[in-house]
Image (cartoon, rainbow, N blue to C red; front, top):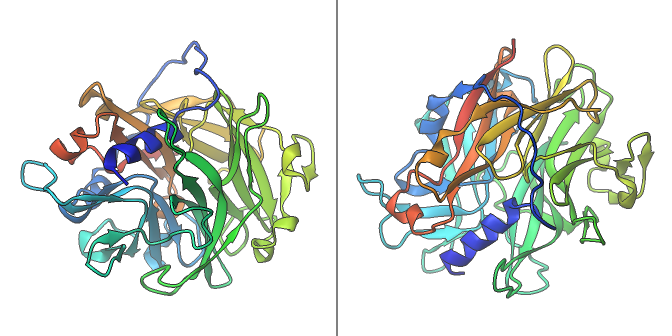
Length: 390
């Protein structure tokens, strides 16, 4: 596909669907968080993998506790990724290619460039290809943007959005479903072999309600994951794409993760087997986000305020389903000052890479002027911040 089309698809996905974002009176902003420069540097690369968005991190041990990363390897998955070379002036060289997804594997807890490997497939001629691709695609223009995942019973389960080209003159894409991808957790490279299943965790737009997708965040409230108050369930979070994106919650037992009839959806007062009965529990979130437990027993929702903004925000709750507090802005991303075209999006936490006293959070950076991704390769890569938890 042409790079300019990829940018249209990307910018469309992170924008709210169904209308303009309502205007709000904003709460005061303060930078409680601060840059995690050591993690920024890990993904500031000039050869091979040179930038991506959609970053998720999954401990292959299944242990999500802060500080647990030192005893395991971390699987990273990314969405649209540049493969190629960058010169000393931060310009991408001719031949750089944008593909739809890649992986990485980090050994240990430290952001050491010597301990991370990046993976993608290649064509017979040596050109880069995505790691995962739909095998039962309805047409040849479908691809995956991986979302969150979890390790259960020695397997890595990864939810992935299925995207397709539409021919629309403005937003040339559509979400066409949610798939569940399964790979042995100890296989390197991950997803060298995998199986995929189409799920019922997607509903198209219906009247005033936007489309619904699940798998954007997972909280494993289990003993294996080291949860403080485990009830044995995996909480699978979704988004309803109204004028502003709204948070939805589902749950399933780990051993039933691939049995989609076993999923239950939160109605605000009870659990239902019907995905249509799900009720939003928070709004003004982003396409990607996270829900994580805190040492004091509460839960923290990390997201980009209003989908596409320079504000990283959080909400708190006493249970994985809420009710959630009002939002607080904890960081204002400075990258939007690079140029009028640059935007930031999709903040989320990485609990097992964090410490008990501070939470590691990433967000993505991109530009509406696709040419800028070549003249300034420093734009399109993840950024990281630390949020103190005192």
